[in-house]
Length: 288
Image 1 (cartoon, rainbow, N blue to C red):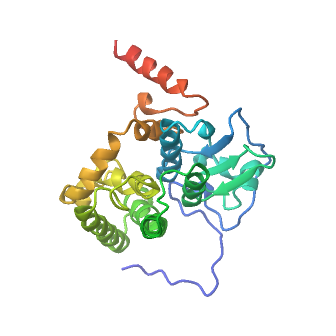
Image 2: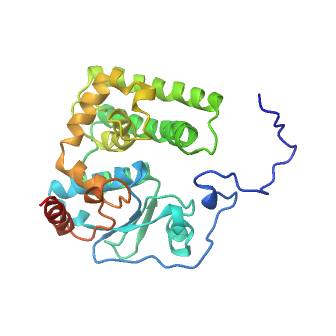
């Protein structure tokens, strides 16, 4: 039993000692001056290959696979462990200092878009793809998109933090968030028992939003928690995740801005489709 008693007024007077202690602070705004780079494509993405970042790179690769050449993009690495998200240029694009952030430079005036769900919806509407137009189907898609935006903090900031990153294991916190994550997986399990994809019979931005979090969890590649959460029990979620992994655009999107895992799975920055070909050649060369 902890003997900690919360003070009447909270003050920031010490580091919490966790893995991300160097970037945790109770104030917003930039910590240093740094302009963002700008490439040659209409869309400039500033991101990292975390689940929230992967949502957007999957979407962009899917759009390009459909032939939307206007979706060509430069993906610049924002290393949140180094505090890149607090540079003045990034804060100007996203005042919340979270990845991903997008700047659309295809028009006369650049448009900034931040929050991963907002970026997915912006791109879907810009290119007329991956979001239904019929009223009830669109409502279903957006409902699941916003379900993900509201639910994932319990998975990432809640369960993931206390299970994988906290400086000490707290049984109460891990149990509480594990129970909620399993409830969320059960929500998806029941939905996918009656539907091929999250929003219905077609693949949409709802799938792209949910897959990098819950699909990765079901595939056993998130937080090393597959056994702890018994993810093998969620057979419909695993069936759906397996289907998405087979999509070439999903595989490409998962590589972009990735800085962890096997070197062959990482493409720190993406400025042209040929970057993937180069990576494939590097992988083949390493295997010889």
